[in-house]
Length: 309
Image (tube, rainbow, N blue to C red; front, side, top):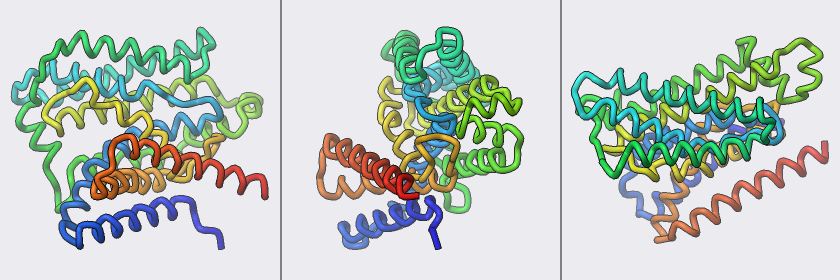
């Protein structure tokens, strides 16, 4: 019996959790679990969006996620200005920013025929510059109520984790039950065949690039509220992480296949690996090398498995 790919991601997360506890002599299990759910939620949100893009097929990836998070969080906080009862306004600004980013990314890909990697990377420089210009070194705190929500919990589970879970359920239902989900999977498996079958492939691609940017904007809004302000480098670590959680979670890098539970498990695994390395006193360079090694190993294993089938 073949185990589902997402099982391995959750098993790896469980193993990393146990090893980390062993390194700390079993102290702080509850705190570690709470931190994993909190910080893993942000990786899960951007990972779900990246998963949709990668599902489109080879060459599809969004490298503007970090800049979109920074710009959205910055503009949202600047609009709210720490004023009470402005959380909803800030959310609208953040999501509108993400929508605009998605539109620009898709237009660069569709009108100029640029490869998605080039288009989103080049556009990210513009978004980051706009964030720097709008921020101007100011660190605006989020409204108190919004900060309380972002750092709070419900029935012992962080609120941001509940947001990630709700989004994961929506994405899963969309992929499994909605027509658009079937169109996305078909487009990723064979775009030419999908066009011949009457599927609006470009419309599906447009919706996908809009979705990933809106998800990144939401993550930026929550992260800025969680951390007490929008730093200009706040999204940097999510460039590699957003891709890693998709690959580790069992989604196919060749497209046409997605794995929502795997993304959640992989997001927890990524945080726990960092925690484990911190327990060893490892530096940031070692963390990046290990993450890259894990991705390469999984890609090689997946390619070898496909060649044997």
